[in-house]
Structure formats: structure tokens, C-alpha cells
Image 1 (cartoon, helix red, strand yellow):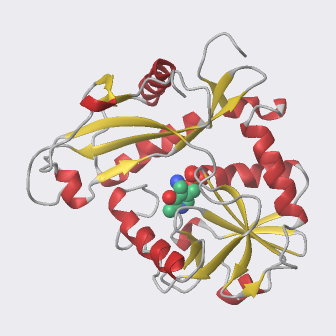
Image 2: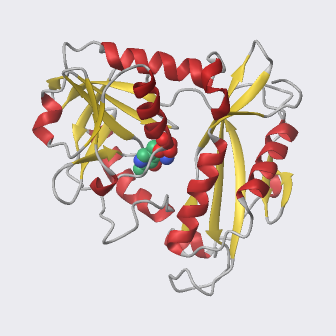
Length: 310
Ligand code: PMP
């Protein structure tokens, strides 16, 4: 839209996008020494406002991500929230958006490390609708790449370097005619997708792997578990084997980017009857109602960007 003004938060202030640039010598660019968040805001026509989904939870995870790797995030969650709201407000978005805050080693310095190296915060905002199909079902494959384990790199920190693992799996899947990859963890149990958590349904029960399966602790995952419980669906967090995926009644992914996207095929096996399952549909529809401000029960999960409209 023409009335969008492009700004980012960079080196302590909100600046036009064209000024938010780093040197090619930037430490984080060489070593992946950064942590980041991915947050969605949804435009609601009825109230003419944008609602950011679970902003506090995302900022807590960002702060924990930084703490785990010892990156210095010198702003409180409250300060980060104010900056994000000011930034989106200044840009004037009236559409679905994606907010990307990150903390990165900004020094022009050699040697991979997290200590004794200057870090900075940056935030940018994009317009973003679906990036994976949430309607027609995804074709997936179990990746030949294993999800890295917490003994090599912290899985509960959303650390930039870790996305090399994701990129390898995603490219392998797409180059083999699939939409998305499914990782096994180092023990051989189901972990997650390349950038999303995974759920399966068997005999009416919703099942998802535990944190000990090398997953990122997804905020959408937590929300799905909570919504499922609220509508009377039994949930279980436990290890899942590869072969159990093939005989699941339903499988779907959850994540900020992917939202709720159902899986129709894994390694050439049709999941269920190849159509969206009852529980996946129920949770997907509820999820989209919640994020777009159509379900007042979950208002506490939404932060409006523009003032005086709640
Ligand atoms: N796993 C990975 C590896 C991810 O990158 C993401 C996206 N942040 C998720 C899971 C889902 O997390 P969330 O629901 O918080 O977006």
C-alpha cells in the first residue's frame, strides 16, 4: 500500500529503512552469532486495527534466547514492546505483518565468540500473508538431516546459526518436490519442521513431541495446546517415532510463519484420508478467529497497535 512508510529500529533509534544497513565486516554476518524473534500482527477490518499475537511471550523468548548464548540484550521486555509498537505505528501498516526483532554481534571484529563483543538490537517489519499453504495440505518428507541437539547448540534459543540446519532440510525437501521437511532428533524421534512445530492426531488425541526432542519451544505450539484443552481435545506431549507419523489420522504444523498448516503426505504416504482432519480443521479455524480478533475469549493474547480501539 502506498501510505506505508518503511522504517526499522537500528542502533538505538527508528530510522528509514534505507539507513538501517550494516558493514560486510559485521561479526554476526560471518558467524551467525545472533538471536531473533518472528512475530505476527493481523489486520482486523472491523476495528481497523492491527493485533500483535502473543507479543509478551515472544519478547520473553527473545530475552531467554539471548541469555542462553550470553548475548547482551540491554532492553527490558517492556522497553522492547514500546519500541515495536512505536515502530509499527510509525510505519502505518493496515495489513497482516511480520515483525523481526534480533540481537546480533555488531562489532567489526574477527573470532567467533559471544563474550567481549559488542551487540546491538535491530527490528524490521514486513507485510506478510501466508507463506505456506494453510488450505490445501502440504507434501512433506522426513529429512536426511537430523535436528541439531542441545549438546551441540542450544535448541531453546532461537539462534541465527541454527538456521543452517533448517535451510539444509528445507532445500532438500523442496528440491525433492515437497513443501516442507520433518526433522528427526539425534535419537531418531520426531522433532519438528524446518521452522515450525509438529502435531499429530491419533484416536482423537492431539500429540506433540516434548522439549527434549530438540524442538524450539513454539509460542504457537503452546497456544494450540491451550486452545485444544479449552475445546475438550485431549493432549499428550511424548516421543513420536517416524512410523507413527505414517499411521497418524492427522498431522499439522504450527508456527508463527506457517500458522496452522495441515499435512497431506509424508514420504509418499497419504495421511488419514488425504483431506484435512476434523481436529486440524477445528483448531485451524479457531486459531485464525483468535489471531484476527474474532474470539473475545482470547483477547489477552492480542496487543493492538493503534490506540483507543479496544
Ligand atoms: N521451530 C522452529 C525451528 C522455528 O523456527 C519456529 C518459528 N519460530 C517454531 C518452531 C515455531 O515457533 P513459534 O510458534 O513460536 O513461531
